[in-house]
Length: 337
Image 1 (cartoon, rainbow, N blue to C red):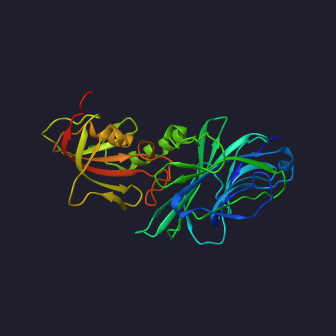
Image 2 (image 1 turned 120 degrees about the horizontal axis):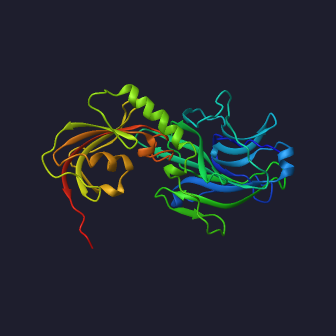
Image 3 (image 1 turned 60 degrees about the vertical axis):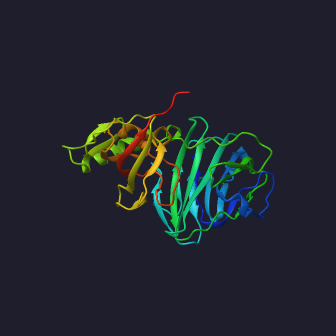
C-alpha cells in the first residue's frame, strides 16, 4: 500500500505527543527550568490504523501539530494550526498550501518508525515566535521541513500531551525536549539522541540552493560580485593587513540582515566582536578568507551557507538568504599545540 505522510502543524497552546500506549488526553506540564524550545518523538503507525485513516503525531502549546495521516487514498505528513491567529513564514518544497493544513505527500510505510520534530524560536523584543514542523525520513536519512508559522507572542513551550485516536493506533518512543541552549532532555528511558538538523541532512538542500543562487544572480550587480562555492561576496573596502585565515580569531564589526526585506537581525554597535572564524557559519569562512585586515566585505549567503532549515532565531526563518557587512579590524593566529 502506498502511503503519503502528511506533516500537520496544529496551533495549540500545549506540546502534544500522541500517546504511546493509550488514548490519554492529559496535558503534561513542562517545568520552566527546562526552558524547552522543541519537542521530538518517534512514531510507528500500524497497518490497521492506516486503513482507518486516523491521524496521529505531535503538537506543541495546544495550537501547532505535525501529523501522519491520509487524504484521498494517499498517506501524508501535514502541518496544522488551531484557532490562534498567525501567519506562515516558510513552506516546505512541494507542499500543498491550498488548504488550512500544509500537506506533503510521501510514500511512508506502516510499521516503520518516523521521527517528528517541532522547533521554536522566540524574540521578546520583536514579540514573536516561530514554530517549525519537520519529519525525518529514515530511508533517505534526511530531514524534511514542512512549514514555519509565526505568532505575535513569546509563549515558551509549556505543555505536551499524549493522544491516540484509536488504540493501539501508533507506538511512540524516544521522546525528547530540546532546551534553549541546544541540549536535550530525555522523557523516556532511551539513550539515542535525535539526529541533528545539519544542512546536508536536508532532503531539499540541493534544490533550495539552486533556487536561492538563481535569485541572487538575478538581483545582484554583475560587475562587482564574486561567486565562491555556493555563496557570493563583494569587496567594499580593500584592507592593507594580513589575509584572513579560517583558523584565525577575528575582531570585527558586522551587520546581519535578511536579503528578502533588509531587516537587521544582529549587529555590533559601539564595541566590536571577537570570535574564532572556524566556529562560525560556512559562508563567513568561505568569504572572509578573501579579506585582509582593515578591509570590509559584503557576504550574500544562501541558506545552505548560513543556517539552512534550522529554526535558530525568531528573526531568521528557515531557508533564509542572509547578507552580512563585515569589517575586519584585527586577526590573531591560532597557536599550534
